[in-house]
Each structure stands twice: as C-alpha cells, then as structure tokens.
Image 1 (spheres, rainbow, N blue to C red):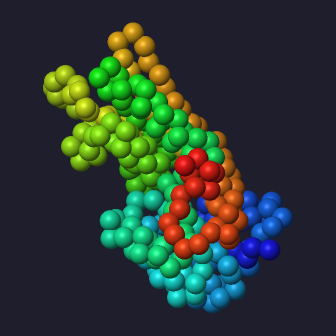
Image 2 (tube, rainbow, N blue to C red; image 1 turned 90 degrees about the vertical axis):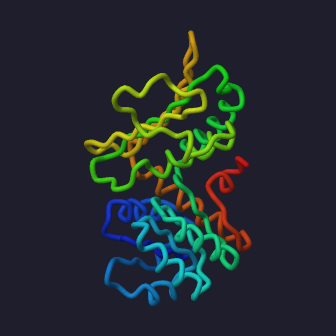
Length: 245
C-alpha cells in the first residue's frame, strides 16, 4: 500500500487529489499539509508526496523530501530556472516525476505534436499555439503550453527566445518564416484547453485537448506516484510513466 502525502489539501487541486487517491485501492492518504502546518511531521508518515500547490513552495517541499528520502510528484508550474535546477539536483538522489500536465490525453497531445511537427514542416506550415484557463490562473502561458512550445522548438530547431511570438499588436508586418505564435486566454472556469495549429496554403491541421475536470490531472498524478515506487533515483515525466518515450 502506497502512503501518500497530499499538499495544499484545502485548495481545489488538493481536494481533487484526495478524491482521486480515494478511488485507488493501492493508495492511502497517510498525511495532508496546508500552509502553517508541520511539513516534516507529515513526511515522516509517507512514501511519496504529490505537490500541486504553487511554485514558491517547491524549494521547501523538495528540500524536505530530500531530508526524509521521500519520492516526489511535482505538478506545479511557473518555476524559475533556479527552482528547476534544484529539482534536477534533487533527482540525483530521489525518484521524481516532474510534469507540466498529468493528463493522459494531454501527454498524447505532446506525442502527436512531436509527430506532426516532423511531417508538417515549417517550409510549408505556420505553427500557432493557443491555451485557455480559468480567470484565477496566475502564470502565463501555462506549463502545458510551455511544454508544447519546447517540443515544437526541438523539432523545428527554433528558439523560444528568438522565434516564439506572444500575441500580436499593431503594424507588425508579415509573419516570419520560423515564427511560432503563442496566445494565452483567461476567463470563466475553464479547466484547461490547448491547441496546436499547423496552417498552410489550402489546408490546416489542428490538434486540440480540452479538460472538463481536474480529476483527470489528479488521477494521472496518483498513477505517477504508483509508478514511481519501482523506479531508481532520476527525473521523470508523464511520457515516462505512460511509456511514450
């Protein structure tokens, strides 16, 4: 039986993670944590932490997990390069799953985007990415959109800094050949929509995933925690968990 620690228990995602864990017979929630509570005491009771709180908490939870030798599933986004470096360093000692999105469908979208970019090359197809989330989301673009852009940059040999354009305004001239457009929408209670568009003269291919419930992300995170039980120290993502690499 896998003993889980769920952080951010009073938040929307924390509540959903508790629901997902309750539906999994091989998992028990041995401890929970919220701001102001004793993280070390909670870690002492558990085998794995699932953290979907905020990126500013990541350093604290990673440091504590290292101290206790506790496996870690990280679902927060918006990390700085310093925070990502801390996660990479910790993965030399701990098994960690660190993913922009834990949905099986979204990870299929990642895989399809890579395949499409290899076929629908930039000499004919322009590429645009669009994401929409609820009004309360604080980082933009989303972590999932960032991962889509990383995949596109890898396959097209472009650069996030030089070739990704965030929205367009004014008399900007014609579209650049290697440009990848990124558009962020916020409003209502949208859980998460992501689209990758490949547009050429005479045809257009669109890959889209729409999430209607946070439970899909939570169930994926619990699945990742179960998978992590049998892995050595290292940094993994959901592509590893799902066998898509």
